[in-house]
Image (cartoon, rainbow, N blue to C red; front, side, top):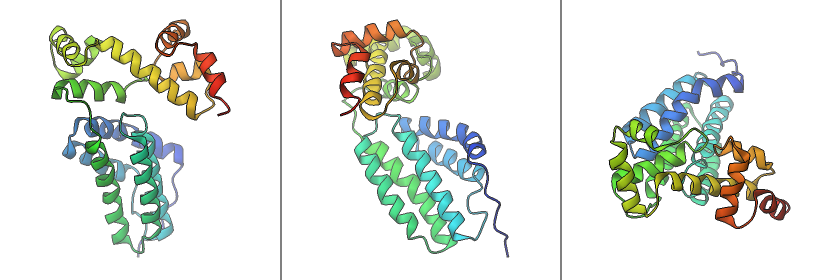
Length: 233
């Protein structure tokens, strides 16, 4: 008979799973089902999923994975309403787990539900390459982003990629990055109590003055004005 595993520190679990989460997100946004599934399986291993027969521990682990994936998908373009509905559905599903086998089945149902949601979120009718660029941008908003880095990641010629993107979308990759970052900052102001500097850093801006100029250009007011107007709404 297996002994109940000692609960691992949540911070340790997060650190161990970080790379798998990143790989999972990138595969998810590329529509790479096998790559996403492989990363997910590795994450389950790193989290020591189902190392105990104790159902309470199994359910707690399932809730942890569900929480991870919700937070992860909310950083992408994937419809947040649909994602939240899946999250709530899975909370109820996890609570109905009654055996080790159903816990394992539920772990994979979590994967398939979220993967299906990512594939059902329609993007405009752009080329496959341009959609991949858009997915990559939304998955890495908080990181340094530029044409050369994206082209290198996608193994594409930077000039050709830039031309294709603008032809499909009507704007440059740089302009799209700026718009996506400002939109994400607006989301933070609408849903959190982040300060202007915290939101700027969270969406990849180190230069707060530059962030403010771009924000005003896109939104018609400063980030401070927008935040103050929506802070208590």
